[in-house]
Length: 105
Image 1 (cartoon, rainbow, N blue to C red):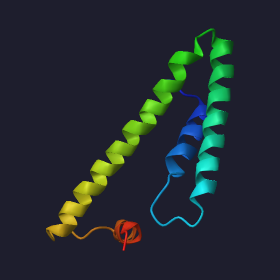
Image 2: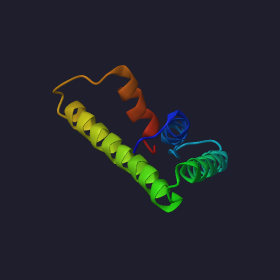
Image 3: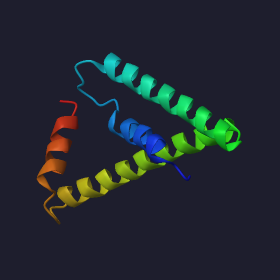
Image 4: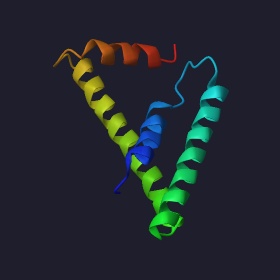
């Protein structure tokens, strides 16, 4: 992808700001995500324009990487959940807390 630090910062912020069950103000989270995506789009447009590349190809690639990272995260959490369920390995405390916080009941 050849992302520079500014695009990587936007991508990192997007990976951190996600909608989760039990949020007190999900509308604010969605507004923040929209602002970050807008900043990323503006930056990619500016960056691609300076490099002489079409922006249409850069934006979907970056957002696709974010979707891939989320699916990898989900797969990792499923694996940890399986290990916890089978009592094979005790999960790290932070992961255990994450599971407890995301339960819908």
